[in-house]
Structures are given as structure tokens and as C-alpha cells.
Length: 314
Length: 156
Image (cartoon, rainbow over all chains, first blue to last red; front, side, top):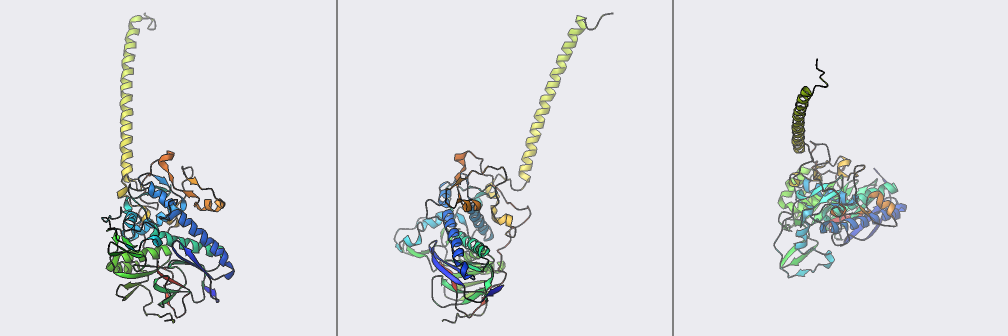
């Protein structure tokens, strides 16, 4: 439903190592919606940050090999991550943490040396999500010894879903939450829908295709951001769980639309990992998707708008 | 006519027969108890193998990824069963009420330190026979637009 004629109210600020943007159709509700978003961001950071030694994730990883009981939010984040692993047949696997650390992503991206001559250690494939022992009812988790979880692929998307849903419910208006390009909507969209520029880099101001969404979510994954040089080769943050190395370059960007940001992010991340197999896989999911090859050619799948639409600001 | 209750000869034979009978009853009882215990153990083992969600082999038991997303009870973490031990450490916070309501005031706690039971691998929390659904598409797919973007999606 679209009921709102004036442009949405908006606010942006740094969060989770990226940019958070909040749009609301109810201008007077912006402050309340922002409070909810800030709360959700703090909660997900407390639970799932792998850069904070005091986060719940760090505590869980430190106790690998020992049964632990986790918080409700962590349980939800883990459940979401394991579901992503199953639905992608392990292409998006939360047990990839050790491999991510091994390629040098062991600190916030801002703290990574852009040129690191240190040789890469021998690649270690992910432990494998099937080795995780998880009882969601009792929220009891047992990681195999030596396993490090990385919930980064889905936790940010989960935060967007939660914040959008809660803010829309609290304010009664339409809400869009965008966390570094992973965006979730909830409540009634503005007239004409939410207009979203589709770029390689979420922080880019370059012109590009624009689409409107009236519900659901969009997420984009890519190999052109969060890259650095390690031992003379370019590495990036998306690791193939099967090899323990940055995924081989095939797609520059994968953008997927889904009912939730978690599903969109799961599919976009899987597309990058799957490389050329992503076309068949995405086609089977039925999700609208736009893939940009490293040579710049585009592949549009599902109900993604087929005609190249310019934003009018080119 | 001899009184059977006062005749010593017949009484001594009766005691021997009674003791012999008691030994036989005792032996039969022990064998019955042993057989019942063995049968119970065998049946329990058989049911452990047959019932879903109780495999003792974590690798063979998929985690919660197979939960149907369309079932909120499967995608949302279910609360601990009533009466079940939930050893959690609650964080003190000014806004503790809201966090506690969300379960976000709780942090990972080491069960081994608190003497709670080992984690039991759980294959699924949804009815057996259900399969993992696919990723859910949006109600409406993205539509082409000519207007200026209000926000942007892109890698980060």
C-alpha cells in the first residue's frame, strides 16, 4: 500500500563498520524509529561482533569444544546463519571464521593494512555447519574444538529486518533500514515505493540503475569493496568455505530481492561464492536478481527489471 | 492320631520344602528382573535410533537450517521449555527490562562451569517430514524507476 506523498524523512550515521540509513514515511516518527534502530544495532553488535572481545560471539568462539547456553538474540542470529548454510548447501557457512582470520581479516577493515607482505598461511576450509551441535529450544550450542563462527554474512541483514519491523510497528509508518547496502522495508511504502539506486559500492554516488520496492528487501554483495593486498595478491572479505580463500573473481556485484533482508543477503553472498553456478542456482530460487560480471556485463534473473533503467542523473 | 502342628518329624520336612521353594522363587524373580531390565534397555536403544531428533551423531543430524521459514516457531528461537534449566547470565543494565524481554540481556554462559547437561544434538524442531523451504521472494519484485534514489544498495 502506498499512502504517503511527501519524500520520506531520512537520517544516516556510521554503524557496524559501514553506514546505516533510516527512512520513514512518518516524519514525526523519525526520532522514535532512530531510537529503535540504534537499539537494534547495539544489540546485534553486542551479540555478533567478532571484533569485540566482549561480544557474545567472541565468548562463544573462545569456548569452542564446550557446551554453552546463548542469549535469545544470538540464538536467532545462529539459527538464521545455519538456515542460510543449509539453503545454500554450505556456500554461506558460519563456520568459516578461521579462514576469514587466516586471510588477514582479523580486525576491523579500517585497521587492515592495505598492502601486507606477510605470506598467506595454508588455506583451511571451513569446519562445516553440519558439525555444529545446536539445540534451539534450549539455546545450547556446542562448537567443534577449533571452530570459529563468523555471523557477519547474515547478522547485519538480520539487524535490518528486526529494526525495520520493530520501527514500523512502533510508529505505524513505513520504514526502510539500510545497513551498508543491505536494506529491509516494513510498513506501508511511500507513494511510488522506495526508490533504491543499485551500485557496486553502497557508498558510491555514481549514477546507476534505480528500482522501486514496495515491500521486502534488497541486498548486494560484491568483490570490489573490502579488498586488500596480501603477499602480492588481492584478497577480499567473501571467503569460499570450501577452499578457505577469497572467492575466485567472477561476479563483481550480486544484488538480490527477497521477502527478508536475511534471505536477500543469503542469496547475494551465495551468488558471489558460487561464481558461474550462481545463475542456475538463483534461477531455481526464483528470486529477482541482478549479477554484474567482472567485465561489466549484466545478467538479470527472475523478475528483476529487464530493461536497463537509468536513474535520470547520469 | 498325631497332631500335625506338634509333630516334629513332619514339621522339619516342611521347613526344608519351604526353604527350597523360597530359593526357587528367589531365583526366578532375579532372572525375571534381569530379563526385564535387558528388554527395557534394548527397547530404549531401538527407540533412540528410530525417533527423530535424538541421534547421537552430530554430523548426521543437520542443524536448524532445515526449519521451514514459513513456520514462525521454526525460524524464531523458541523459548526454553517451562521448567527446563536455562542457565544464563543476565547483564545489569539501565534498560534491563526491555533487553530481558527480548532475551538480549542474556549472554553466553559456559554450561560446563554450571554443571548443566551436555548439549543434545537436535535434528529439527519442526514436524518430521517437513523440508527446508527455499528462500522467500518478495511480494512484489523491484520495478524500474526514473526518479532519484532515496537510498542505495551496494556492496559494503
